[in-house]
Length: 436
Image 1 (cartoon, one colour):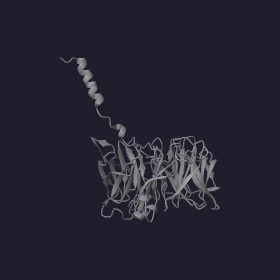
Image 2: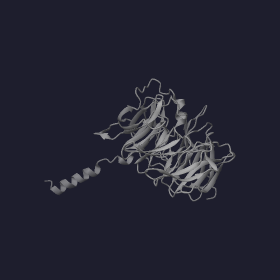
Image 3: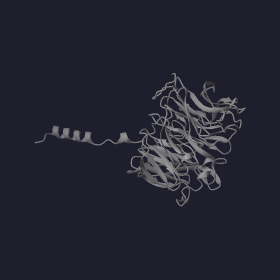
Image 4: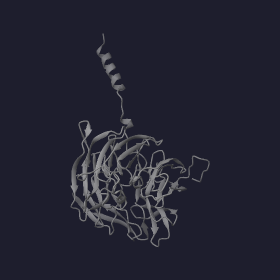
């Protein structure tokens, strides 16, 4: 005869044996998950500055680069380049720059950074397909799309969200590559007849690429924000919810803003508390929108147009991406709710890369003297703009894709010619060691 105690004990054993699969859910916890950092596109890393950094290595990808690398928690770089022959996608060791593998992907690979999750699985789009690869470069799965899924973000709940350059949004299970929800079109009649058509316009925000940058994603509210072209009309900002209805996610429109002066451009960035969306306008302004409703909170005149989302810290420091050697001032703003206050302005150098921020009020950017004779990666204070450390780059570097942050505060940037520059503490896993 089974007693109540025995029955309860047996139930407890069964409960303890119930599989817990949450530990295999892909998450945005890599050191630098992808283009513009994590899912919020805010080019911010919750890491401390490395106390000691030295030039560690350089590597030529043999083709121009436009997107900063992703970096895994284990210190593996995933980076792309546009090459005439050979590989376009590379996996490199952060410690020494050694190539672990490379492959040649189809058109569009060079326009995106592979997205990397905490298991070092990577996600990359080519015309008509979203792919996932394991750390050994083996295909885990592929998912069909209409257009090229250039713009990819991890979306929480074991899903990856991708937007094709033609305007299709898909949500895919990261584990097995099945649909996590029905795909939607952000424009009427998104067609799969020419999945690579117009992709060359994505680098210049041209008409053949109505979606020319990655979305910002709020993984808590399960909402994505994306800038979408409108067939000759000013580009609009759209919010799409992807929360669950029953066992599947239901992608549905939340709001859109198509009345922004001169239209939006590029990619949006989401504040740390997910309440504010920052969007570049074609009229040389930065706009702050209420993430819940889309209403305008404020606009600020930058004096130049940028398609790159600003870097945004948890305390509301905004470093807009300047347009390079056009003598646009290097500035930072403080979001004060109903307006933006200028924190600093530097006119001694021109930014030639997007900025990145980390803990402690520290920022990084690649700059060039206005005389156009010196390029440097600088570490600066975000409250004053004061330079703290400088790392020299060759004068041939006229622009850079951004600054990626490694798991221990290492810095990686890629010049416009496709040369990777890494600055680390000096530790090595091989035979040679440089000073700490």
